[in-house]
Image (cartoon, protein in one colour):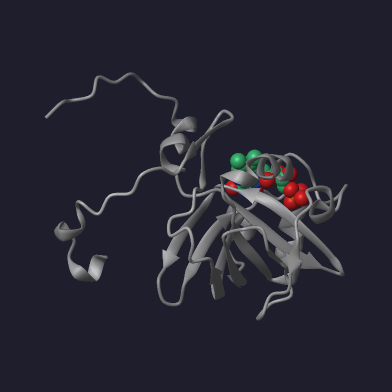
Length: 186
Ligand SMILES: Cc1cc2nc3c(=O)[nH]c(=O)nc-3n(C[C@H](O)[C@H](O)[C@H](O)COP(=O)(O)O)c2cc1C
């Protein structure tokens, strides 16, 4: 098989290869105000209970909102929301009401107070279950306590950030390798 010819690559940029998880919108509520931020740095940490780790920069307004309220919603936007996704990531809830500014609809959650974004394909209601790594790493360990997901289209056209202003759009799917999986790994 082919060996790739390689050059030194800046260590600080390796995230470009590791970031293809979908860009998400994190919605939160605290003291009667709501907010939204754009997020790429998240990871799945466990199936059951369903846990997600997220990096939220301490300068973001969302940092205090999620830390104080101990909850948020991870919303999955599709490509038609791309302009809003960038706008939400380039403004702060300290200055504006992002639901109003970006014309998004706040729908009530069922288990938490933070609002769902109705225009997103899926919404995961999350509780902050471990705050011990926030101070050191800005790492929020969340547990998904309720999930809402559309059924059509089956595979939403999601946005995946490559850095430097470039998005990869989710594309074709293949089940060609499915038979190679151990059933419990599916
Ligand atoms: C594509 C994209 C991905 C981003 N990913 C993250 C992230 O993973 N963590 C983070 O703290 N900020 C991330 N940001 C930056 C925040 O969305 C941005 O700082 C936002 O203005 C914070 O809003 P807030 O102050 O209302 O919380 C991202 C922005 C963009 C455009």
